Amino acid sequence: MTGAIAGDIIGSVYEFDNIKTTDFPLFTDESDYTDDTIMTVAVADWLLNGGDLVKVMQRYSAEYPCPMGGYGGRFSYWLMEENPLPYNSWGNGSAMRVSAVGWKFDSLEKTLEVAKETAIVSHNHPEGIKGAQATAAAIYLARSGKSKQEIKQYIETAFSYDLDRTCDDIRPDYSFDVSCQGTVPEAIIAFLDSSDFEHAIRLAVSLGGDSDTLACITGGIAEA
Image (tube, rainbow, N blue to C red; front, top):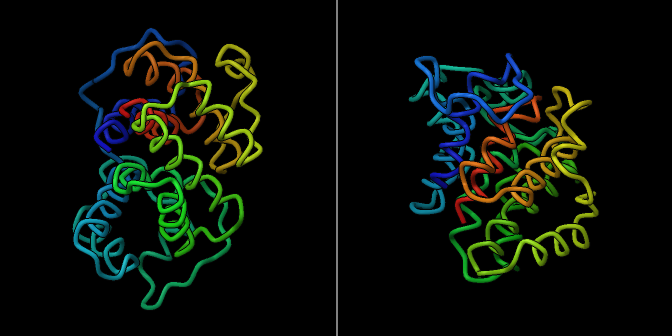
């Protein structure tokens, strides 16, 4: 999950100032963690220590104010509610916080089950669940020694994502998109196109769009 955090920090300065190239400084004086890191660590805490996931997420949001970016509008209200309920979100927040699940379990089935569990507390739309499961599955498969081709084939078959594109295909027309369906496939493609971890992060950021979340998802997979 450190790969996800690194991706978030690197992408943070480009979220609202997109850069359509892989040639950029990885870290600047303005680089910082965002809500992606806070929720990633919250899920990891829950996996390690148990408890009520919703309460853990709310505690992290209260104790660690977000220095950059910010939570999505509806999710920010969810974090402050006394008894928050899922709100049918398909946003990429379910995918950006799930990376620790991909490392925790010894079977793909359990990984998918718990990835869904982390999503549905807020993002219970089918696309929100799918984004979390696809991200966690890619991490699990990568750390299990599966090849990029095997990972690609599984994700395409299980989740119907179009991965028959390259970053060069996507980059010219890609714009800010906070949906799982408009973020997770692109983040996975950045991993598939890459030669190493740094290259994966650079490719993800170079797509533009929601740069910190793209790089967070890509980084979680590329680390594995």
